[in-house]
Amino acid sequence: MRTGNPIRIKNPDEIEILREAGRILAVITNELKRSLKSGVKTQDIDRQAEELMAVHKVKPAFKGYRGFPKSICISLNEQVVHGIPGPRVIKEGDIVSLDVGIVFRDYFSDTAVTVGIGRIHPKLQKLLEVAEKSLYKGIAQAKVNNHLSDISFAVQNFVESNNFAVVRDFVGHGIGRALHEEPEVPNFGPPRQGPILKEGMVLAIEPMVNLGTWKTRILEDGWTVVTEDGYASAHFEHTIAITSTGPEILTK
Ligand code: MG
Image (tube, rainbow, N blue to C red; front, side, top):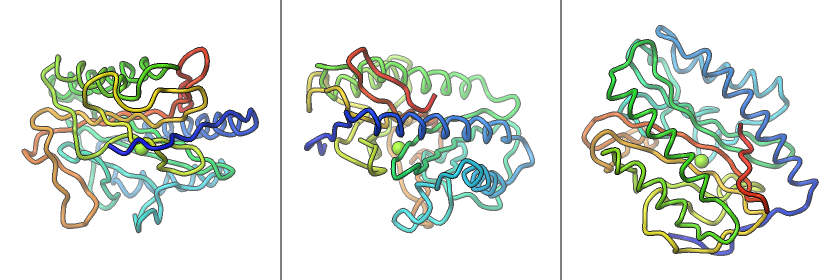
């Protein structure tokens, strides 16, 4: 993994902007969650995201990123991440992942959540619970003097003890002045490896948890990542800052 020179943000003015970027993103994402219903097209959710971002005077971080055509990523069922909003209609029993990133006064925040539509299969319900909990297990390790991979290990250990799998091909990342900064934050690996965590590091921690195999492939659109076996996948993400008193979740 790439782990070189994690950026540290310690200037109180910058931290305040990051807090505001996280707060606005949480408000927008909660609003979008409420719109996820059977019969809605994913492109309608994307349009709503654009409107909400305009209202809050922030920009979509993903639009145009390496050519990504839409404002947010929406990934259904066996889609892991990077789904492109379009005419697909959401239906009862689906699980829908929203991945939303914004730029506020040149600072970035990034979050993701997976939601079940109506009544979902109990196995999917369990997948959502374990994936969300694994994010918090990882966040709990994001403290001064831990190693980076203590986060990774906590996520993997929790997920695998619940008989699910963590995606290897996509990882979390540093964030703040850019969408993707050093270090990479894998959701797997042994503890006590990589850089030592310090106050001022800002990380996007984002476990992607699969019902079946951890292996993935990319569809012909060049973006949409799906599980190799077609079983479902869930994704949860927060942007967090490491402070002297522990992790601060910015996107809450
Ligand atoms: Mg991210």
